[in-house]
Image (cartoon, rainbow, N blue to C red):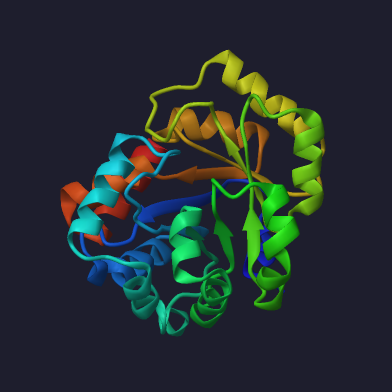
Length: 257
């Protein structure tokens, strides 16, 4: 069974997934960061492939990607860093990147390397569902890699149900139509959006991302859906501390108090 499916069988609420950008602060901290997150009980981790034009990301992750690229982080080097990751890490791992990076690397080669490294799923925000289904799903299935799709407040119910039918891992519920970035609170409109998604009774679990940065934002999302993805807040902490253990400790304190 896929590790993500197993996670959601064992824990249906209050899931905490954390994103960081590979190569920031340094590629050598990839495994120590994963270890620190796992040791502190993080349920799942999303590893970002740095890209020069990350259209879905805000200034914090853009800056992290820029630093990672300047330090020489590439997809080839990331896979080299991850080749023995499953000797130490047992929680689900998701890799997130933009399709140009995958296409340049080679799509089938990419999925094959994901399998070899023990990656469970991918998020490719700029690869439309229809394109993936038509051209790439057989490759992903050949290597046991799930695809995770994003929905926003503007996504129609018909489209959401299409995504639900095509999904086997989880659906990434983008909290707003804006880019990534920490927020201090979610308003009633945002809570109503999460409630609407919950009312659809989808077969696939849903995690809320974009804007989760403290107890207030996490609580609103957790009240309606299966959990959250924290990105920009952790990227900030990891950059400022240069210490994965310290960054994880500060993140958990922020989310709990």
